[in-house]
Image (cartoon, rainbow, N blue to C red):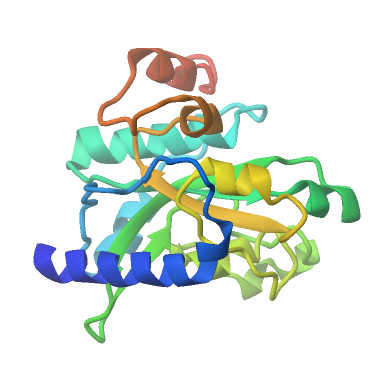
Length: 225
């Protein structure tokens, strides 16, 4: 099972290189998933069950997506021994300017799931937002399933459909090419807390940082932990 997923990761990496090769920064940059092996969930049913156990009610309304994503990733690791990834959706200055958009990024856990046909797909676990896309009418909530979804489907919840968001391996490519695309995707180990970890640090994180966990807890409502 692990060897099969390793091969799939290689194919994904090759695809990302061909897709975003022209974006590669001149300086040596961090390979965010190099050597990192997330847990492969064996069935879609198990993925849905795990997804439905992720808490949404303990968080303050003002909590940040980075705090919720870290909470879910830490819970999956500490309670279920699941090594997840994080997926960052970065919005460029071009997108924010043309659509009067304020967010710099959104982030959620990402876990590979084996599907019924035997293929493996990386699925986003984002129970706070996977309900109705930001561009859809609120009366359309019945059209959208609250479950793990693919990265391409997840993107649609925040950006108008059919917008191209290249996958890049380092923060510098997002930073340097703000006018080329509306958005970029980065996948990282579960230990990444905020974009500054990708922008300023020299090595990919390989463990939980106590300071991040303390910051994460500030998102909780009083008495919920």
